[in-house]
Image (cartoon, rainbow, N blue to C red; front, side, top):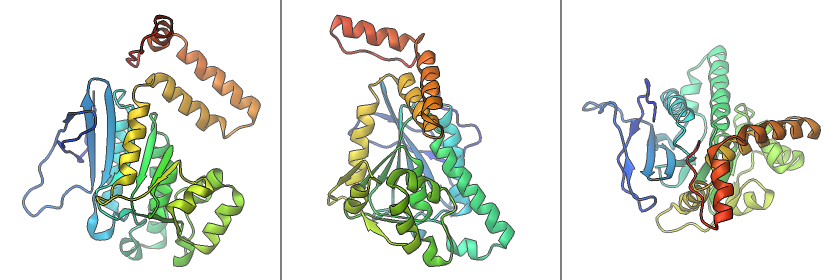
Length: 301
């Protein structure tokens, strides 16, 4: 069951051609003149389809990471973390031509040094929370992903971008350095040399170059609607959803924890994750389906 708790983000009822049927819950309708939510959660629901979308919606500042935006995203992540029915999460923008422009520098200009340090720590923790979601996450980059916006994409498990999308850790062009995980995650994906080059120069690269560096899982030509990366991300999510969800989550855990340690320790982590999966009904169902030459029906138990 989806736990809303104190979350203020609106779950919109949207139509979709994928996994036909969605449900949405709006805990509070904004009053006349009140600002709309900057983060929306859209959940596809039908039979075994458990795809959730985190939709960024702050168009006037290109989804800049302001205080309200960050607070709402924290709440959405808390909702998703404990929902076992969600099997894949797509992070996308509702603003055409942009994924996320990074930190809200106008807000930041009004901060003291101590306030700015707290703000960056909060951003760093936010990206860690995205990375810590137990289910696979996919960033759909259909436009600019700069600074903290790219750091958000780096915190996701998979990244898909339109070939025309622009990405970069541009902080050094503003007298800053990446502070929300960029210096650490970028180098793990593309290697030290390329990561240093991009950070030292603040260069922006397009989707094709990012793919050639190993930053992206897929790059696709942009379509007239401007959502080609989202469509590819949705196709990936639909490919993940039928698989055994406990095994997928444990596989993610084994990879994420294993990469932080030496190979022998990583093998021990894999062994522990494998042992946790052994008594599940899904493992038994998978073996039975193979023997009976049919498709398995995984329930997440």
